[in-house]
Image (spheres, rainbow, N blue to C red):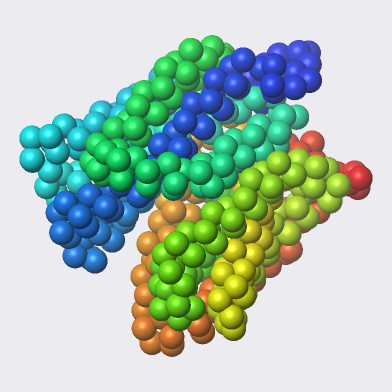
Length: 437
């Protein structure tokens, strides 16, 4: 069997456009992405407009969504021992749909509380971790190895489109239906995703214990996943780079809107317009990522992407002058940053999928989530502290410098020398591939 779970003699499909199982996965993920944009807007608005929550209470909603990732390393160790990853993904979608649906029901009875909102945040966040740790091995068995970049490009394009159109759709639904009722649209997208994924048929095999021995305890399996990440040159460098750039990007994340409003003196409409125009950079990056990686090589494209993602924060920090220059600087920075993150994510995700052994995928995904996502709230807190002490403009420049320098983790690793996914084998270090075209 190949790494994708298909017989080694079976040729990869010439186009994913004719691959029914992948199209169902892509459709389900696309619907979920649009639903997520609605909830990202609606949940904080429920706290602000309906429950009159304080700034700290509103921030806690976002923090609680991310909090379950701190236990992802343990959940990933458990998921690796479960045979039916598809069923776990369907279960995760159904749990998220049910949790979100409780909000409009409670609203109709006048029973929404802050505690209820917090509970929904935790449950949907935990179900998201279950979905993501199950997704890694499922994707590898569904998509042929040579199609990893193409598949991630299509999934990334859907995510980018959702960021372009999703906020507008979410805003219209909130305006028309109220925030609690608008959340129901997100619940429906999870139901549709569960239906589509449930119809996918793919060979799934359990991770067997070596020599038929008894499976080690969950904590031991979690340590094995973390040990593989730390010992593997590609996984170690990619985690270090991702964690560093995420820390500094979240330093900037909490300051950007505040800086644009108070320092650049842009209206909410102007900021939204700049972000909407900027989000098209992500769509363009997702579409062009396969071609660019073919020309530059996978590793160089990853390194280029992380620089393009982080460096434009400095453009925002340096913005000034006439109104059109301030809006243009914000839009241009968001455009280049969105383009860069697609080059980075699509190629790095594909490379990681290529080198992780089948029986370790969920454990590695869990270890990554615990470290990589766990650093984000710390970055946001650091940004708030730094902005208070040093000011927002210097803080954004620090975030740009720190995020850009995360590329050093790649330049001192084998990743930058990898030209194609064939240059790395599961469970082994890479060998330099042929020069890119």
